[in-house]
Amino acid sequence: MTNFTAVAELQDLVADLPRFNQLLKAFAQKLQLNLADFEADHISVRCHQNTTADRWRQGFMQCGSLLNETQINGRPICLFDLPESLPVGPWSIDLVELPYPGDKRYPHEGWEHVELVLSGGAEGFYARALAQLADEALVAPGIKLKQSSPKGENERVPNPTLAITDGSITIKFHPHSLRDVVASER
Image (tube, rainbow, N blue to C red; front, side):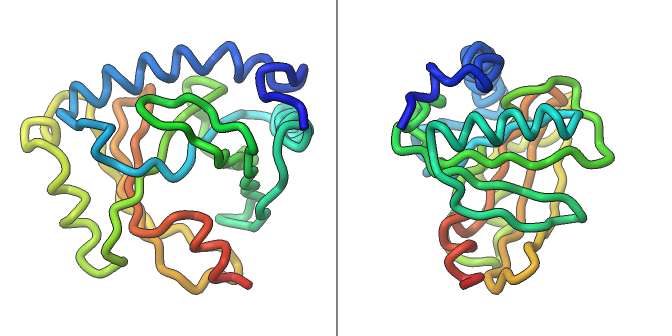
C-alpha cells in the first residue's frame, strides 16, 4: 500500500497537516486541555465539492482501506483505516473520516477536527465531556459548543457528541470509538 504522503490525490491534505497540528496545539492550550490525556479516535476532513471528496476518497483507497460507508444526515460518510498512522498532536491516528459535503460551508477545505473518546457510555456523557474543559474556556470569546447525536442507518450504539470549536478547528468528544459503532451495525 502507498504511503499517505506519496498519494497524488492527497497532496493538499499532506500540505495541510502541519497547519492543522499547529492550530490543534494552540486551541488545546486555549481550552487548557492536555491532549496526551485523551485517546484520539479519528481525524476528519471537510470539503465543499463532491469532486474533492471523490478525489480524496480515491487517494485514501490507495493508502488505506474503506472500513465503512454510511448515510448520516443525507450524505455519505466514509471511514478509512490506514495501515500507517498520521502524526496528529501527541497521537498516531489510523482512522480518517471523510464526510461528503452537506449544506454547511466550512472556512477551510482540509483537516477540520479530531474526535476523542471519553469512555463510560452515553449516560451522563455531556456532563463528563464538559468537565474536561476549564470554566474560563467555556466562556472565552469565539468558543462555541454543540451537542449532537448523529446516527448511521444501522447504528445500535448511541454515540452523542460534544463539539468545541473556535471556527478554525474543532475538538469533539464522544463515548465510543467509531470502530465500536461500526461493529454494532453488523
